[in-house]
Image (cartoon, rainbow, N blue to C red):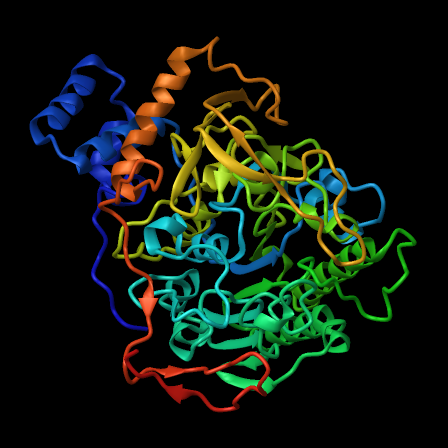
Length: 540
């Protein structure tokens, strides 16, 4: 792994302030010390000093120390799974015993978010600790994309490799399909899976003519040039077998497994063992097979004696794709779904499991987000944070502390594309005027064919998510002071990350990686067989 310069120490004060300064802050509730701190802030007058002071004021509770043993890290990341699609979050139509066990023996997060409710954008944030708009990854990349995750960005895999971890990515990648963007170039020792979504193929129900055959990759080689519907039925099982094999092979060293399931993204596919098993339709069958997969992972960990040495994180990249109706999941009481900044799009189920460390059968109701995973992992393994600025914060206190432990983030920001549409601050969420896609009360599609969305619009709207998670009652007129405070926060993030609605370009945004002349590229064209070997990219 390439050596990278050390990070600005003001970004994460709980790790970088130094012992003496931390001791001072531990008892700085005295008037003189507070005035001394404010004096530093006024005299320095920089963004870094402002960030340090606000972070310190927001984090007055002591940071729980990490366990002495560095854990294995397993991330199981679903695709298009809704908030209410597993038993511990409200699913009733099918059993999910292994996921229920994960929740019973771990901690569920009831207010957990993704940065943006669409594939590539969401995954970019999970793996880098950055809002996707900061690193230039938007939407869902397909075979025509000539960009992807930049070399300058540090992934969780690269961070853990710096501490001696074996690393493996199994499943959907979706951060660029050309060789320079693949997992093996960004910290993963091994990769097995699809380069992008499983509906980006000639059998798409409405746009099949736009896609080439769907490939299956191993490391940087194509091992299947044309996945069929029958092949997709085996994906969950094949992914699970690879994940278990990786655990077995690396049982004697620390490891990071990133299992990014293709399901429950359409087209839904399930093996013969689970087809019809639920009696409640194909979606339920698929979820039962996913639950089986989780059970296989837990079984492999425990068989190797690694259960109490492993942190497992289970979540989804965004909410349900509601237009697909009976082939889509459920957001439960939340409003809308994938492709929106409403709660049904960006709030996802989340479970953290680490027996003997994370309190069993507990819940956290404080907001958190996928951007917070990387700095939390860094804290647990004693790794340096990335040299480039990131947006996540260490949420270890939320994993092991009291249920009411406050979030280390003052607010979370929700973009659609480059448009800042909503901000969550504590119990409050403010939507700025924006258009959005909705079924408007109409049923979704059937049998894998989507129903058309309608376009709706929301004005300035403030919701109290503690009492109104469905975002039904606009309280903006009753709480102008809350609106004003959130608008001030929004102005700050617009200066940093931009906003297409106001025409602002953020000073903190970075470009994604781009194909350069001489780089290897996959030249995949609709209607043609896939080339087995990459070609050399030329300047267009």
